[in-house]
Image (cartoon, rainbow, N blue to C red):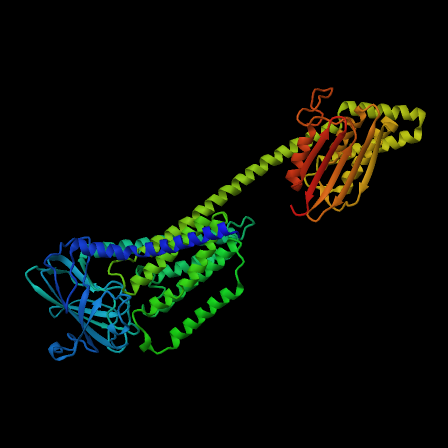
Length: 629
C-alpha cells in the first residue's frame, strides 16, 4: 500500500472512531437536554425540590442526585428507625468518575435507599426502576406502591415486570420515597428510579417491545435468506459467517431490556442478573464473528494468531466471570469488560477503512453498518448498567435495524448485478451465436465452393491422385465448418490447426507455387474457440498474398509465455490500411470478419487480438490467450 492510501486509511479510521463515540454520546446529550428543559433538580443530601420543574406527560422525571443509603437494612419491611442507623450518600446515575466504593452494598443482601421530594405536581403517575437487574420494593410515605421480582433477603429472582400503583403527587406535599432492593450480583441500587405518567409508561413499554420484536423478526428473516443463498452457487457474501453473526445479534436483542420481557418464555429459568454473562458474551462474539466475516468478505489476510488471542481472552474472561468471588463485582464491572473489547473494534474498523481507501466494493456500506452495530452495543452497555438516566433501550434495535438495512442494500445490489450479468450473458451468447454462424457461412460462400470444385474437376482429368487428396481435404474442411456450429466451448488448438491445414491444402492446389504456408508450432496444449484462427489464415491468403503478383508466404506459429499462450499469423502480402481497409468484390471490407473473431476470442477465452499491417509489406496478427481466464 502506498503512502497516500495509508494516510487516507488512517484518516478514515479516525473519522470512524469519532463517529462511533459521537453516536454513543447522543443518549447522554438527550438526557442532559431533557433535564435542562424540565429544570429537573438533582437531590442534595437526599432532598430534591421540584419547585421550578415543568412536568410533562411524555417525559419521565429521573430521581437523580444524592440518595441516602442504608447497608444491609430494609427500613420499611423490618420497621426500623432510620434515625438510629448509619447512612451513606451517593449519586445517581453512576458515572465513570465515581469510585468503586461509592456503591458498596453487601452482595446478595438487602439495602435501602431514601430520597425526599418536595413541590412535585404530577397526576396519574407511577414510580419504578427501569430495567433493574434485581428485586425491589418502593414505598411512598410508608405505603408500598411498586415492586418487582421474587423478593427475599437471601437471594432474589429478578425480572423486568413490575406491579405499580397509580399515584397523585400534590405540589404542596412532601413525599419520602424508600426503595428496598435485593440483588444476587449487583451491589444495590445502580439504575436511576423514575416517576412518569402511567399511560406513557404503558404505551412506551409496549411500543419498545413491539419494535424489538419486529426487528428481531427482520433479523431472523435475513438470517434464513442469507443462509439459503450461502448454499447456492451465487454466494452473495462469499462467507459462512454472516448467518452466524445474525443469529448472535438475534440472541443479543432477545436477552436485554424489553427483549427479556418479550422472550422471557425462552429464558424463564434464568435470572435477569444471570443473563449479564450472556449479554457480555454475545457482545464479544458479535465483534469476533464480525472480524472473521469482514476479513473474509473483503479478502483481507487475517493473522491467525490475532483471532486465537481474542478467543483466548474471551475464554479467560468467561472463566474469571464464573470463578471469582462475588465481592469483586461493581456497577462498572460489565462496562469495563465490554470496553476492554474496543481494541478489537479499532482493529476491525482499521481493516474496513483500509478497504475504503483501496476502493474495495461495498467497503463503505460494510463500515457504516459496523459503526451502527458498535454504537448500539455501546449505548446498550451504558444504559443497562445505569450510566444513562434516560430510556435508551430502543437505540440497540434501531441501530441493529440500520445494520440489517446496510446488508440488505448490498444484497439487493448484488442480486441486481447478478440479474443484469445474466441478461448481459444471454445477450452476449446470442451475439456470439450470430457471429459464430456468420463466420461459419463466410467460410463456405458460393465462390469458394465453386473455385474448390472447379479445382477438383480439373485435377480429376490431369492428376487423379491430387484430385482425391483435394476431395478429402475439401470434405474435412466442410465437416470442420459444420461441426463448429455445435461448439459453444473452446476446442483444442490441434483441432483448429487441422482445419487450417485442410483449408490451406485446397488453396495450395489452386494457386500452386504462388502461395507458401509455413508452420512453427512450439506449443499446442491449449484451447481456442472454433473457427478463430482459420479465418485469419484465410484473410492472409485471400486478401494478402494472392493479391500480390509474386505471391507470398503465410507463417503460423505458436509458443508459450509465463502468463499466456501466443499464436501469430504473419504474411508478406499487400497489407492494408487498418483505418481504411480495401473493399472486396462483394462490397465488404476485406478484414471486417476479424472483428467477430476478436469478439469471440475475448468472450470465450479472454484473449486479446492485435493486428499490425503496412501497405506493401504485409500483415501481422497476434493472439494472446491467458493461462487463467
